[in-house]
Length: 238
Image (tube, rainbow, N blue to C red; front, top):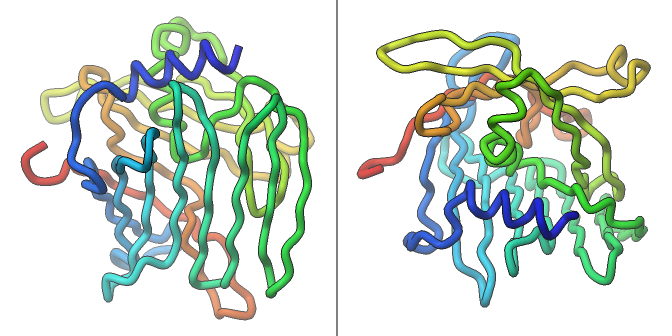
């Protein structure tokens, strides 16, 4: 099942298309939900690594320093691993998929903890959710919910989410569709906020994201994931 879904995602991502290594295809301005101006920028794109390709998402502060990153590696049309690094908190973590298992390793406070779980076959990296929405577009447009598991390396386990279409509207000569991602568990849903993705109906490009980000807010000793709105635009020449 994961291999089939991997190929669906690969087709949506355009894995066969030639791209320049490490070149971001979109850049986003990150504005905290609590208010204020642009606190960070985020870059999304692809880079070639060995025989596979990596979908990267890098957050930069106003000085241009990368403060957080998430990289999902695809090999043979399927998700092979995810790596997370958070410079603001000093955390790093990774998950590798092999032989039907997901193997996690997370470094926090100078200590590394490991765990493993069965590969559910429907694993989607968090930064690949917009592409997964595009791959399941017809189902979502028909009003059906799409469920999948997201591996969270720093927490050393995966969590189930569902995506549903919220609304469609016209703006600036194009049609936009908004999708909500949340836990299908009513108890978890009551304790957490959903995330929202706005995607161009024609190009399937990510236009806006609202929810928790990889960047943090607060002091180093009391840092929390930043809740923000991210407005995306194509990079020059795209």
